[in-house]
Length: 126
Image 1 (cartoon, one colour):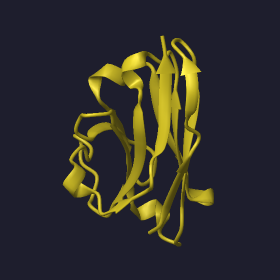
Image 2 (cartoon, helix red, strand yellow; image 1 turned 180 degrees about the vertical axis):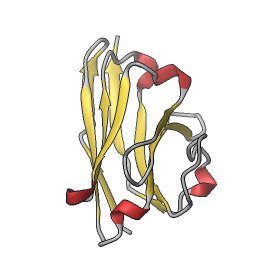
Image 3 (tube, helix red, strand yellow; image 1 turned 90 degrees about the horizontal axis):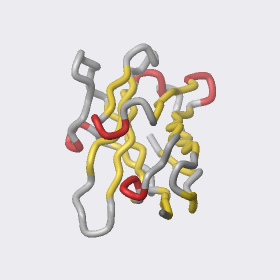
């Protein structure tokens, strides 16, 4: 699976962005998809994940109610809609694919994801 993330940019606090991640391959719907982010000087962290069917989603607490992950299996794309952005959301955002099965807790661990996109930079100014 090859992943290509896009949609990052510079936005003012309170604004919004939508990230997209296009995947190659015919088995996209079998993968759990996730978004992670890495701020300067910090470790990469989980943001959101979605099951293969799109029926299950899990978010990190700090983005609940502001971010929405979704997927379009017909077009092999996963999205991250980010609203009410705050400067603390500034980071490089990565999409990733996991072949592991979905469970009630979602897939939040970096090691669960075998395929990674190149990252897209999101900068939120105050």
